[in-house]
Image 1 (cartoon, rainbow, N blue to C red):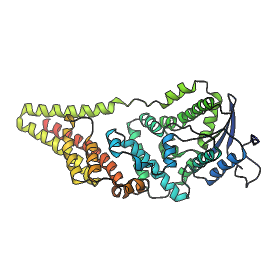
Image 2: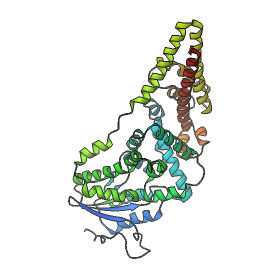
Image 3: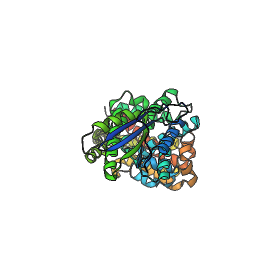
Image 4: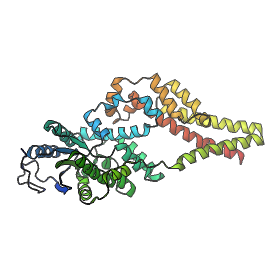
Length: 412
């Protein structure tokens, strides 16, 4: 028997009621009633509101603002323990893993500061769906796609700012600023972690907020049609409520077509790789010119290339606290960049590091907590492998530029 539905108001009568003052919207589309609850990701009241709605009203599906990977992380906090570190390095996913760790570190800081883990209301919604025997729908776009679209949507200088902001957020030991908390109460974890940049960058806002509103609306329409749903509870961050409702009311495109476009990974910009290849070619042309002028000058130019790139990579490995063999591999691999396949010196060094200092199960389990402290990046063997990759890669690039400057100065 269907329970009576609550009146379509955004608030209820008494202050003690867990739904009092909570942002609730109701949208009817294609014969489906969507009951949308806007939540604050660090608020116990949002958890209570989710539970109250599930108790008072009947739904044949519960949708949450999560993608499959974020849902797995929420339901299995030890998911990092199952990853294949060698595959992560080999497939060039170190940057994406590092970004995920930054988000995890931000979550840990919030949990320690406020006693509630961000997304607890999403967990309550999924648990409630399990308890009632109705499906829960993961309607958000994969976080990796969102971050990739955000990254590729901004220019070089904004990327540098993002990297600096991410590093600062990891090593920041103070409480999370009140302004960030207010954003988190109105938006979501991704928007809050990148809040300083998203507000002043239309491409970032589009990737982190606007596109996801459209994506979630299309997912709701697709799932409701496929399952024959009639009443769906939708739990999203309050910052998505207005945009999601608007898209539910006005979207006319076929959901599958819309989802395919929004889930596509944009092509990587060619100019950074072209610039890197061009730099190396220019340096080797300069070395060839030096040999043509004088054999001794050519040998000096070749020496500068070997010493600068090896020193840069070695310094990166040294700062990362790499194993001596990892440091040696980094110093050998860096000068050979033009003669070896696509795996960078940082990748080769990181693989050796993972082989020589095999991360323990305890390192994987402690990874989320350890990356919230700067010392943890050196103490945790998994984090140190990632650090080794990043610092050796940066050191190699710095060495290439230094070598190029020295060689060109010797010629002119």
